[in-house]
Length: 325
Image (cartoon, rainbow, N blue to C red; front, side):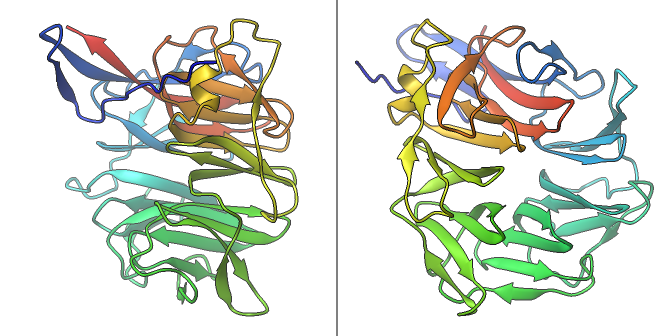
């Protein structure tokens, strides 16, 4: 089987030397209410020129963090509205977590902001003295923040105070993602591997021979997406790993790129479903990452998934589409 790795342009405008044609990026949010079987566009109100980086859910409210600020909608609504309580010059929002009535957003350069009234008003979280908050995770009453160079911070009082979990991490550790499986916290470090927090030793230890860019947890399984490197899964809290395989259900051999070390840009999961965004599209697993099939109906043929929200009755996926002009 030939493994041809696709190329995803990260710039907003690229030039194809071979064909001398221009291409631009368009950004779309899709919604599925049938567990990823089919999708419809769900981005009215969000500019097509702005990338969606993260989603959050608080009761019936949905949040989308974008390069142009924060947007919200309600489950019964068909359109998104911009949040007006945040500073107008706020940089990109790249992470979201919700806890109780609180919404936390991490930015690419301006630290963290928090709303305690479901998004009506916002304040800067001055107790977390970092500028870039790449990942946010709320589990079992505890909030975790993954940063660009300072490791992981943890708060047990909804962000009022923080302490750093840095011991054992390599220098300049870029935390790209966080996940918790079987009560154990994992962090994915860019180009430096997977680390697990050891409560007894009060430090991080390297977990397995994997170098994930993104993480997702599905029941008791930890899923790791590599860039490049494909998809891997572990059902023993990161002790050992296996590579995901293609499902025969799809029948068109679409998993060549995904499983042949192609980049995986994002992953999201709940107890039943897992989704992965690869360079050529969105993939779905119904067995906790063991096997994967391409999710196609209603989705663009060349749109990688770059953000997911996976709930029991709703899935959101943000995509980027490179278009020729």
